[in-house]
Length: 432
Image 1 (spheres, rainbow, N blue to C red):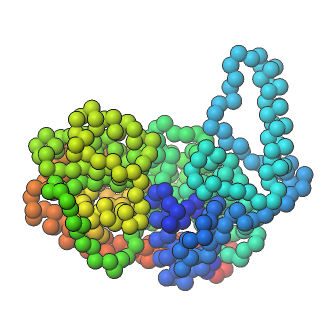
Image 2: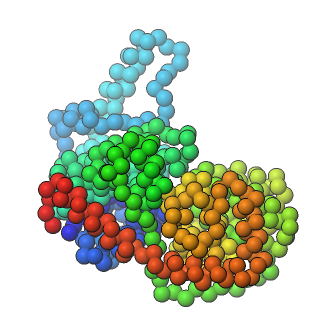
Image 3: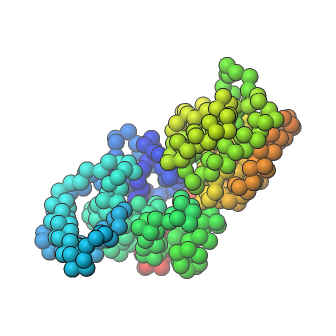
């Protein structure tokens, strides 16, 4: 079986859990004999291609005629981050302004979709433009490759997946690692929501990373329940022997590791830290990551006067994550809404006891983790204090937690996905 897979990042060039999940899943699929063509907007040349063949969308040329431009222009939705409402002009002036903008965009489209396009490979200001370009290239890439099924990861790639399906008629699987409701709560970006919904509606099957996410897809996007399945994430197996890092300080270490955004609940970690430090000053709290709430988090730590015992490391990846976990006595993931959450599995694999929010998908599969409501900072503080002070408690979580995680293998998750591939291919009349 051959799969055309669309992603936005692939290790070692990642900014979060999506790239890590794609890497683990592709390795798991390879163990089941699945050949994967993995498309990214921008390849850097040092990606691990043991289990995949990386296709760089930047290398794809498209030469289009005027008829094609007109066709694309009639279909493509140019998603704007700003409003089209212009104050202090009459309806007639507004209509004239919109006609001029439409004409400008049509010329831009004609010039842009001719030859190659250079992607940033990041999540910058031109993200919507890059998502649209990636979508158009998806059809061209699909026509140049032989495969049985299309697999698109998260909203950034759904347009590419749809284009590939329209170009070839092959079944489309949309994989939901997070929704806009997870990222922003109820303050959803309607542009991204529409990308997500359009992808799910066009898909032959939707894979959610947890039952929590599956229910969101059904309730918030109106996708039929029979079309949405759950396949839990896993963690990469390792033969490494984890050794505690030598410390040059006596305090215990409690770690938050993830994006410092609304979704991850950094403010609740800070409030819990303040409560613990009222009773025990021999603790260091570490917030490892970056995000739009970083500055606010720093200010809150200063207001609480806990800066001496609270450290911000910035974004960590690869060996830096392993080192941070090896220094940690407790790992906390207080996510407000977490579709799954791979980092707690990495912590447990490193024999670090974990505290996770009940509002996380990973809570569905873990027994040997302490689970609290993200908003209950008293319960979170009590759990942290207990793991730091009652020696037998962390030992139980370390021993049985590692055994539990060792059984959560990508190979097993991949086996479920292969069955879903076969089902989708059968539904549209495709053969192996």
